[in-house]
Length: 495
Image 1 (cartoon, helix red, strand yellow):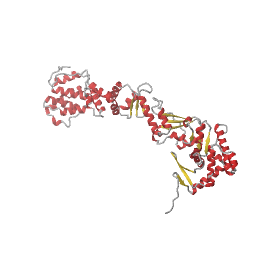
Image 2 (image 1 turned 30 degrees about the horizontal axis):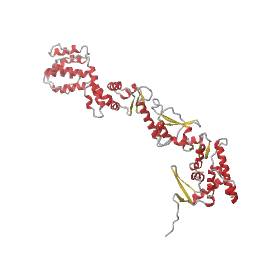
Image 3 (image 1 turned 120 degrees about the vertical axis):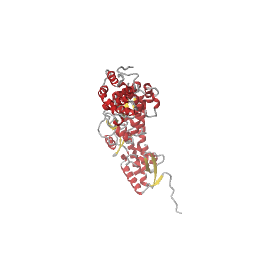
Image 4 (image 1 turned 45 degrees about the vertical axis):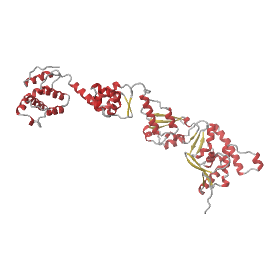
């Protein structure tokens, strides 16, 4: 049986190409240790720190090229800085090669490196051996960032350290905004504003774009910044359609977004939900406010948006007279509005108009119930000024009902009522024919009426037209005229 070579868990056999590239990188840093360090300003704390690190690296470089004697190795200068020690350990790869590599796994991905040196930081070995890589190169500097509160930026051309004061590079800003496809257009509403204080630049992302986003745009600005306080150089201001009423957003929602825990779309959704709760709970600008879908409306605009008739307007006006708070409507329809207010206000209003009328509610017919009630109220109001008679005979009782139907605009309903009114009374039929004649609805009904009934009806047509055109003031007089013409007298008792 063929013997298998033992290999430690978490390691891999390095390919020849991979070994070659690693050795080339180590040759580069041997000749120029500065490749491992960020560019700095010599006058700030970053410059002073990395100048000392560089001096230590030069000692490690010299000792690699010219190994000290036994005595010198004990009493001579030695690299003391942790990064310099990791540099010295990594240079030994040039002698031994890299047949076996360790595999380190991070949330960002996997990276290969060669373990060298006792007690040397894994992160620093990764950063040194992968100094060409924009992500892994920063690992060598995490300790300095934490200890000295440094700000380091990872650019395509290498690392830049601005000391303990943030100075976001314009080059990095342009790269991020280009990646996110954010133009220079400034927005004053319905947008996310990301402001960089050190650069004095501002990026605007519209709410429309945020709704479609499945990523966290803010994290892109922090992605290549290495700092213990990455948010210190930035300000976030989210403006939604509700911001005129609720300017502040819960700090916990903002923190979730800044930590990259939620996407743009979720951030917008959570912020709007918070603002809606604030409006409902009365924590917004004082007064009654109406939010319909993505609009803020005043009372007049709400009525105009929901209503298509005077009946609808009356329903909305009466419900709002009882409802004192702000209202959030996800849908801009009158049916949604009445359903929203039905339990607390609509059912009581329906029962006030007609006892027990709310009992016909089936879970989604509130508008139908209210329209029916208000339709009846309005129709009754149209004839409320007309006199009402007591003790009318069959023909006059039918006539009074039909005329008042026509006056409230229910001509077809009046004709149907005549058709359905079964009577063998010749006078009643003559009166019906007179009305049908005035309404131009006799052609298909002539067979129902006898010659004498039609004849009397036609003689009444002129008086009938006057009754149809009457006002509340002369209705009684013209009604009595017809009553007298059909032999029922001209004295009618008014209720």
